[in-house]
Length: 301
Ligand SMILES: Nc1ncnc2c1ncn2[C@@H]1O[C@H](COP(=O)(O)OP(=O)(O)OP(=O)(O)O)[C@@H](O)[C@H]1O
Image 1: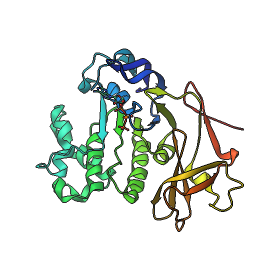
Image 2 (image 1 turned 90 degrees about the vertical axis):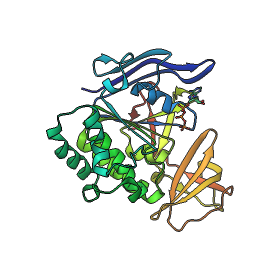
Image 3 (image 1 turned 180 degrees about the horizontal axis):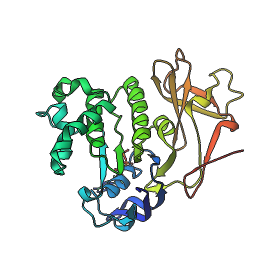
Image 4 (image 1 turned 120 degrees about the horizontal axis):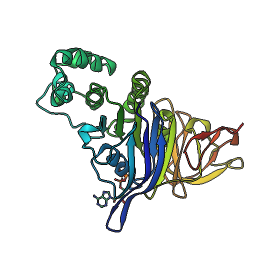
């Protein structure tokens, strides 16, 4: 069992709070996403769970163990970060194998485990390559395979897709979701990308200024629509365009609403300038409410 429980968890450096009084129960095999703007405390919370940062207050449980005092290597978590951290002089095979060697796992099992992990992320044909001979997406998959090979009880992923271009991000994201489904490993995933959060998560935890947010309304990008710059009478949200991303099959338009960033999928041919006013229609029926205490999605029926 790898449920995770955070109780009154805080991290403070002098007067600066990285995370403040976090209370959260994550179920075994759940895929949970920490979503929030830069500096809101996502990484700090994750690093405390991993054991890379000592909490100033509070308790972290993984399964039935309080792990506050345990070294990172004894927590049975595997981490994937945005920088791949591959060893440049080792082949893909040896990079993936590395955690097994460090942990002195029975050598007779290495080959099978490395090949199985590589196959899961479709790297089977690239095992003899060096990292510099791979694309960004392939390197990212080596980092994933290296986390998978250990068969940990918890995955911690800190913006693992942020170095990839939009197209690769979408395909790697799908692969990641599939992998988690197959491996059934409790996963905490950090992102500031709303779309990534909504597509991957069983549950989204929205963070702001080191704290978990208390009332949260969310909707999937594809469920809202751009109502057009001329006819804005149906729009629930009016705001200037913050960014426009061409995803291939769609155009993703983001606007800032107060502190929040709201992204909406528009037709692939849709074009608009940064700063131009835009109206977004968000039908109430497809909005999701998240419980203020548990972060769980609530049914509106
Ligand atoms: N070692 C440190 N010393 C002092 N303050 C820190 C330290 N590490 C982080 N902080 C502060 O704690 C807050 C939370 O940082 P954190 O890295 O957790 O944010 P984040 O949500 O992961 O942001 P990003 O999306 O930019 O990675 C920030 O205000 C940051 O400046």
